[in-house]
Amino acid sequence: MKKKEILSVFLLFMFLSLFSQENEIVVKQDSVSLEKSKINYKQFIIPSALVIYGVVGLESHQLLDLNTEVREEIREHIDKKLTIDDFSQYAPLVSIYALDGLGIKSKHSFKDKAIITATSYLIMGAVVNTLKSTTVSERPDRTSNNSFPSGHTATAFMGAELLHQEYKDKSLWYSLSGYAVASATGFFRMYNNRHWFSDVAAGAGIGMLSTKIAYFLYPYINKLFFKENLTKTKISLLPYYGNKEVGFGLVSKF
Image (cartoon, rainbow, N blue to C red):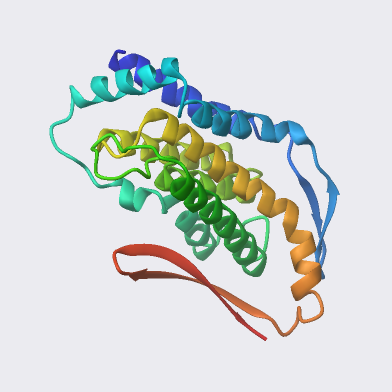
């Protein structure tokens, strides 16, 4: 597989992610809460297909051969490892709050975004960690057997989907930039010999699905936990670093 072919796959991957947004979960926001009005299940097709591709890739000889072919092609052009993916996975998510800080307002309030982000992160983390612990997939560098799926890629596409949902009405470029960074994160996971192509595909699907599900669940979460205390509730989303792990914590004050 040539470099141009690999680049074409990732460009297609990014634009498929974007075009899967044609039919969105539609929500209405008023001064009190968000109410679900419509959901079209077509938006779940492409992310679900990516996850299925990854799962099938655990056993399919054809897809396993493709994984090896992609890996060998990439390794031919590696000079040294670039750990940019350890940071780029968070870039789309951080940019949502950075844009708010610059005065470019998102679709939802800080409180709403914090709850949706936390829900997305919990869903994504639970799915990724469950699959890593229940599947036996050796990493390309043979350091462990928890290669499937790519958690970095899932985190990046979760953030890209959030960025798209919050800023798609402002400009298409916000969505494109988010998916571009997420796709690059997946590429560097393979470049650094940490994941197979099928791991990255599944991670992307899981990330997007986690965010889509979080937007679907938000009206119910808001009604169940926050509606009665809306005027008294203060929510903050804080990054943390410890034991060589980076993540986000949700702090709520009533």
